[in-house]
Length: 288
Image 1 (tube, rainbow, N blue to C red):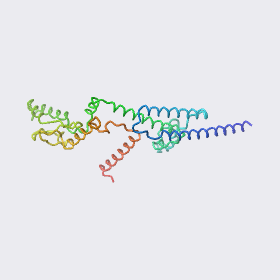
Image 2 (image 1 turned 30 degrees about the vertical axis):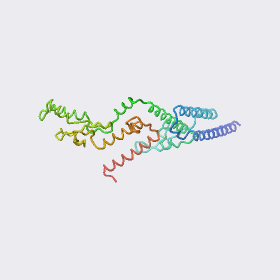
Image 3 (image 1 turned 90 degrees about the horizontal axis):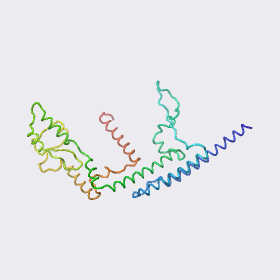
Image 4 (image 1 turned 180 degrees about the vertical axis):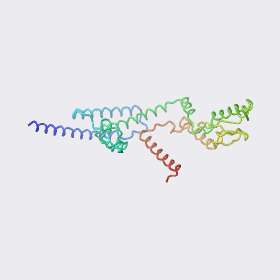
């Protein structure tokens, strides 16, 4: 008799768990339909914050309902990838935290709706957009002084900068032979100008008899006219574009220098960079 009661209890528990799982899955489908899309580009921080709070309240309620019905937390995804066996590391089963660790990213992104990972994915998706909205608001609130500090710190080109020039000049001052005097130092220093492009740290020569060094030879910079403001025609054009941006956006910086990158976009860029790097390495190594 006890055996029959145990069987019935097991069946009841299984039915309860199956029903709770279906309810969790159905509710998460509704929540993903409601919150699993990108918000409007101009959404305010307050609106995005309210969206995240509503999602949090809804997910908290559905998880609590599931726990009350089953007595346990939602399922977690398991690492089902087999061990790569060898003589020193024979095949074995995952145990403890290893059971849930190192689940491949592609599986985590496609987590079943009834799992804790699916709930976390949806919440992270919206939290990411909340951070983006906050970042956008902070960017709009920047003063011109704050932009100037960011512009000063932003560098695109530095093939031969002021430190390189000073190092070469100091080396000539301290050389045992073929050295220059303090007056020679001042004369040589006047032959060099800083590039006028705000994001370029290069110093370029304006006299044919300028000092040449290994560092300068490696820079690729050329002698320019005395009235030149830029180390290259490219920098001249870049500065023109930057000034046009300043009128349009309030800063010389390109948008990608201060934009917020969403998690998915960041991962896609990283994957493309790895692919590009691998291709370059193969070419260098002479591989097909």
